[in-house]
Length: 81
Length: 257
Image (tube, rainbow over all chains, first blue to last red; front, side):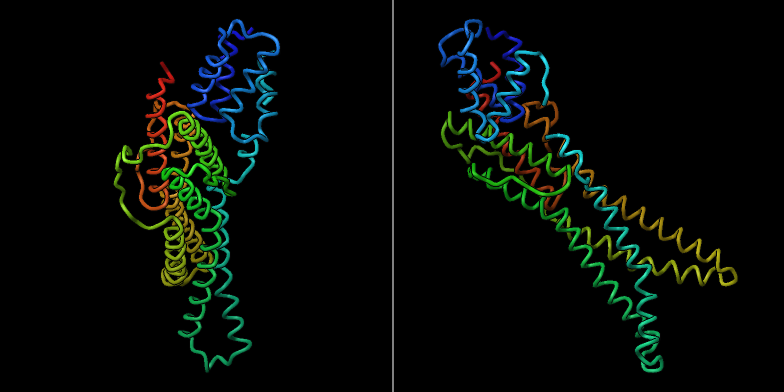
């Protein structure tokens, strides 16, 4: 499940790489998935992250780092970045 | 990422290093030139006035070289950022924002890179921007940072020898007092020029860095303003245009709604 807190974390990290328009990408990606954030579970979480990265982080070399950063905070609540 | 920025030399450190070099040059060159004239040229052929002129010319050349070197350290990255920001303003989203320079400039380049990504997202969603909607911002011309740096150094170079003449004139009896006066005068002069350069180079870049960091993350509590002329003024103007364009796109897409 992706909670409101998780979305806030995602926003903070994506804005750090893509500026204020990152927020829009997250909203649009969730909308495009066609489900409520609370219903995003399991591998759909990864799909959401991939969708956001594809649309907001244009430097593909950074994808792995950003993905790891997001998942670390989502799973452990702390960022090692 | 931030650690790497912190480890870099700040502009202040570079300026201090540059002025230290100028100070050492101005202290050593007269002695070296006088020694060379005394040993390799006949004193009766080369008059004192000519030696003085020779010293000044050598000093001027060395100071201009140091100034140009310092310029490549500080002003080249600023100009590169200015050009990249201008490219972004003109709709070129492939502008190269990578700079090698001080911590402040790298931070500004990171902020611009964030803005570039936002512009690209806006472009993907809304199509190319309407350049006519950009608010026309006027800015004063003026000397670039590099020119101001060299002027500061040349002023130091011209005024510093005055200390030696004045101290010899005022304290004819005491060599110690004369030396102390000369060093004090140099320190005061250096402080004044350093303060001037701090106000025209370091302070504006630090302010721009702080505000750009906020604006590039969507925090508009502080606005970028055109406060300076020359290179920094141009950079400020371009950043205003970019942030306005992002703000417009955010309103259009109702990002915060």
